[in-house]
Length: 334
Image 1 (cartoon, rainbow, N blue to C red):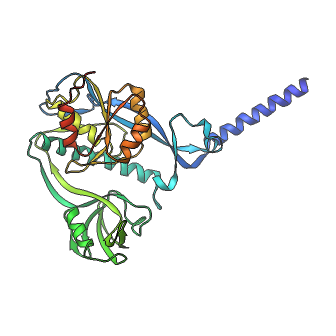
Image 2: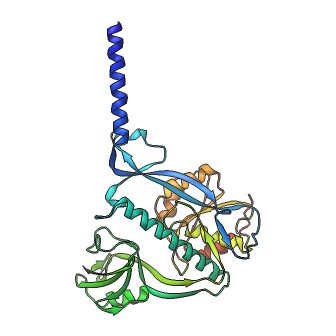
Image 3: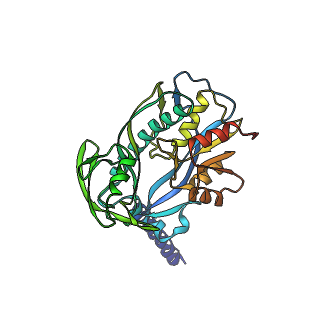
């Protein structure tokens, strides 16, 4: 009996050691875990603030990490509400996790400026925004530009013709035919590079050429009042809508009506609410935090949020202006 007991103990030790090694070894996948909804009251400072009404505005984050070999072998070990994402969906070819961290930090910084500009304009302030090119927000994975352009690139010329706005870019690309070569002059950080790629047909409109990217206005933004936003190590552009709502609250608009209002969505400079990732995890996080209302982008984001919302009210919006109007005119009581 002692001999068998010793064997079982030895097997147990070996099993634990193997599990520890597998847990320590990273896999070629990433895990999206539900984060938390956190109030912005202590994260946003606005010159001349006069907060209106009870309640709070919340941003919602997603915890992203590399999965382990143990979780790859035994998916049931993943936290509830998690999703596994292939590495190439999060890290384009030729980029590292450090590159991604730098990009998400830059996205957050820009999101803060754009949210401030959008919120102040909607509240009647004069905001100066000098156009500086077409900012690349995302690239389709199945187009020639994939792996050549990067989110955060600013397109400043097409075949030598200057580009100041997204409309300029669309006009120049529209002069070509699907499959035509095109050279894009791109500002990437402190460098200027030339990217040679080809146009592709628009889905559903095979005669109309596109590059297969989503763009926004890159601009030099000058704000009329000081606004400081600090989320620490949180990166990415998806808190833009929440920032803008909190700025309105700080400047006297009763957007909360005594409720806990969470929001996610990237803001374009014209106030359009753009889709973001991780809606399953964000919705679960908002639900578990006890948020009353969760504002999300219309379309697939809203559909995904509603499928995980349980008792949480989902409010789908197309623009910041629409969100502000619906919140300030709401008869909701919490």
